[in-house]
Amino acid sequence: MAQLRIALAQVNPTVGDLDGNADLIVEWSRRAADAGAHLVAFPEMMLTGYPVEDLALRASFVEACRRALDRLARRLADEGLGDLPVVTGYLDRRSVGPVRSGQPAGAPLNAAAWLHGGEVLVRSAKHHLPNYGVFDEYRIFVPGDRLPVVRVRGVDVATVICEDLWQDGGPVSVTSASGAGLLLAVNASPYERNKDDVRLDLCAERAREAGCALAYVNMVGGQDELVFDGDSVIVGPDGTPLARAPQFVEHLLVADLALPAADPSAAPGRTPVDAHDGTTITIDRHVLTPDPLPAYPVRPQPAAEPMDDLAEIYAALVLGTRDYVRKNGFRSVVLGLSGGIDSALVATIASDAIGPENVHAVLLPSRYSSEGSVVDAEDLVKRQGVNSRTVPIADMVEAFEKQLDLHGLAAENLQARIRANVWMALSNEHGHLVLTGGNKSELATGYSTLYGDSAGGFAPIKDVFKLTVWQLARWRNTQAGVDLPFLHPFAQEPIPEAIIVKEPSAELRPGQRDRDTLPEYTVLDPLLADYVERDMGRESLIKAGHDPALVDRAIRLVD
Image (cartoon, rainbow, N blue to C red):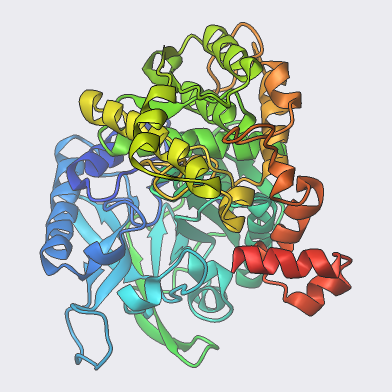
């Protein structure tokens, strides 16, 4: 057996920021070198950020990325890091082969490169291109057809990219034939609920299939609608977890591995192999350092404990909000604070994300706002220390009513749209990003006002059902004084209990309650989860136990 100290750099790039992302690679490579690593790996598309989307179809951007990769290789060597093999994701293009009808313009590649000695040693590209859920890669990229196997300190290391793990056949199926002692997977795998367990099981399955240890490095951070949770992991050839990084934070996972020494007869060169998916994968062998290291003391293997479900969700919301604000050049946010649970949770997420001193809450009472709602909103402001101002809208509403004869829903929506005008005006005046407070239950059923409460730049809880909003509020209150990297150190519960226990209401007419328009959330949310998220049809919903009349009503509301 040979020893290898590997470092997985779980870091947070920004889409399009080639220079800034290159700086991150150099910074974290230096940390890896200081930790005595023999190899450091970065996430998928690290140099460009992910998802790169249609930037990949711009020839000028692809060429800029290729030049940035060459500069990065030279810079690593110039800064004394040239002897450390660095594996990173980047954007490339296919330079040979015929142009096919329907092929993405310029034949872009979701690629990975090994950098060493001031040069790009080897390039490869993602073979399986996902085209489901949030992924659109089959439209953007062309598939790769190589499995690079690079010998480092006497160990053969094979490299694959993200979806190559999730699909049968392709590079992973060829890894066993290559005789690699380690399968390195670079990833940009976005967070979704319970995905950490699915990923761990997948890594264990693929390690057993490949017959070698597997190191999985994942991106962390928010990018537009996606949040990447990190949770990088290393498993043994039998699937046993060996090391694991924490979730939702940048981290350098360093682990000492005992791996099979490479077969000296496996010389550099290229060997085509049946990939068992109707394609051929070429094993591309390179040798950096052929001989194993003398035995050295092994570091303790780090193993972060996974978070519970509510902590995961809350951390994802905070990180997604923080990075959306930061990566889009904002320093502060503004939101309407009604005294209800949704705006209270959004304000708290914002305070945790960027600090309460950068959160500006606007209280916008109308003739229908209850005294309790105003008092509760003021209580939250005091507890969290956010900036606040009160802008009564009664006179504005009356000015419109003098010119327009509005009744019923039109009159109700007018109030919501006036409120949106106020926070958008403050955004324009002061440069704040507007946060909106709509939750998934309301947005799925259309229980919101277009150009009203739906108006803004970012909606932190748009993918959170109403019942989960309450659960998160209670969870956050239990964490007052707890030291976690994604929580502001509030001295007391940040959300008043009165806000959590009150019956939800838009307060756009006298005595209004959500249940006047929507079913009770205790029955609505499970139905929406089955219909919207699990894609169950009418008959399946009824068979699952949902009331037929409620099913028909929910389908009408959603569709």
